[in-house]
Length: 262
Image 1: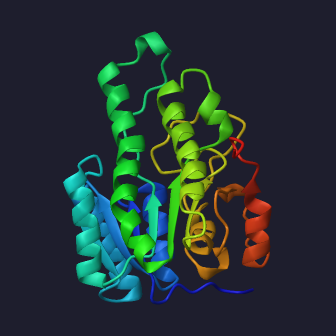
Image 2: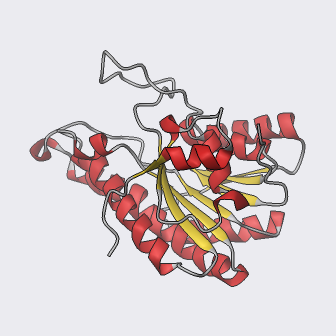
């Protein structure tokens, strides 16, 4: 089976301190990429960097505490990435607000709602906005927005989280058109179901949670030359078949768009 290598590339992964972000960052490093790990969770972030260093050697990971809702922090992420690694090729927008509630509209705490919007939507916009000129100038780049299943976007009492991830799907399709012909691609990636992050509350008794590495193969493919020209797509990690060649697995994992491109 073909193995994708990312030697010589640099990726920034937000929300890299735990869960899907941690797993994707380690997978990118295992494939040869150098990785900037961004999150406000300083101690957990350092643990991920130490794990990458112990597995793959020195100078492969940079732990960078950052709040992506602050533009200055976003600018520092880019500046430090370029200072330490001298390049940036892939941005994985995985960070999300940690305090999500499953409540009807009238019971939601407005402050919590606004903070979720700030992290999931505004934070993703700010870091992407900061990084975009660099990617455009080099004529190559990857932006991957981590979203969620259609069911979650529309489930009762999920208006807080569902609204933010629906916004990311719209942003993905719009940005893909904005970057058309520049060498920069924009895609979304989602697990396809609830993920076993070690501290989940099961919402379905008849469906086992997905493994935390469910997005790993897909993110490596999306960060590679294999995905050249593939933009505006929505990929499902659960449907990625590692027994197939990577390009065939990607084609199988491609979802119909959530929205119709104009």
